[in-house]
Image (tube, rainbow, N blue to C red):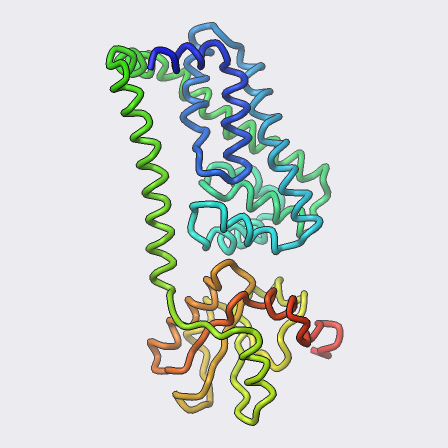
Length: 313
């Protein structure tokens, strides 16, 4: 543990940069504890506030700009990829979208305080067409608030943190083992939460090819688009009806309980579609299946899409 402490003292700026950058890129490595330790180093006079804040700001802006450019180039699909490499639940896409749509770019001021949301919000800013100068301004202010709060808390409680670090040093390899155990436990808990969440939504899916065949048959299914209203502008599967997760309880389907109902969304693991499906199943509908891969898989397969400009609605 003494070696780790010496590394932090000697390469504090580099370690802060790497920690912030990796977290903002979406890896499940919390940077806040590192920033707390950096606040202790500031309190001990080893580093300045300006240097630490600048390093944290540059690291956050660099990582977030990468995701912004990815969102700008690849659209909303990149957010699904982000949730797949993140250990945060897949609902992060929907929750971040809701926050960003409600407050716009100012939402970037607080997104870093919500684990797993920072990279998602950056990609969403790019895909929604937010000007880069506005994104950089709000994201930079958010990075300063986030990193500054950690540095301030570390500085404020530097005595207590110093005592804790000295205790870990005195424990030698056991202290290092304890820190590694806590980090491993953190990652394991996040992984377990994600697996439990996905298991709760496990049910039979239908492939896009099967749905295409079903639509061409005489027994055409009811198709429900469960995406948020702003996502529908990109087009939808012909004949789809629209229902959000919030409105599904008011939805009445004039069909037999065994009639096929297909639901789709544009989120990883068909999270929203599966949640709506669960609600419909509880109401007695039995032949309910989410579309595997959602609207993106349907579009990639080359099947027809109804565009908003052609809908006359």
